[in-house]
Image (cartoon, rainbow, N blue to C red):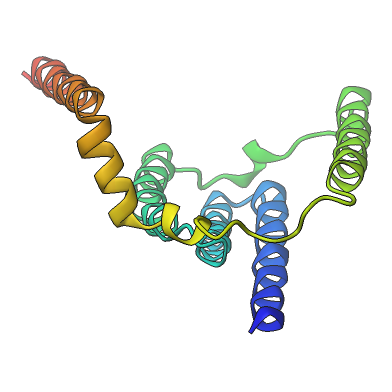
Length: 171
């Protein structure tokens, strides 16, 4: 069972890295958005394998649902039919940015490799219950009830303000 989880973890990680690279390098915004959806799916799979079921479901519902609809709406609103506008020339500034990005990725890889070397690889026995929705719900609504209510009121005020501003704009 442990080997199967490792295989799925590596597969989801490879899909996430591949889709992230493809998302950034595509010139067509629609294909970039589709690769972003694939990336969200792979990251939610990684969360699911790490026993964080609540975060995996929220990743699917919020990001793949709401945020991607917003992205696609903006892409359609901008109406990017002419891809000549998207073409760019290669400059020294861009080459320097790519080289510095490669250097940063190498530095991060070395830091992670030596940072986790010799560390404990077992998951704590309570890690399986911490990521569940039941545990998070109990913590949020029993221990942190007041901050959750305040955040809800702030979000409600923001939605009402956005509706009022949009109503004034269209009148």
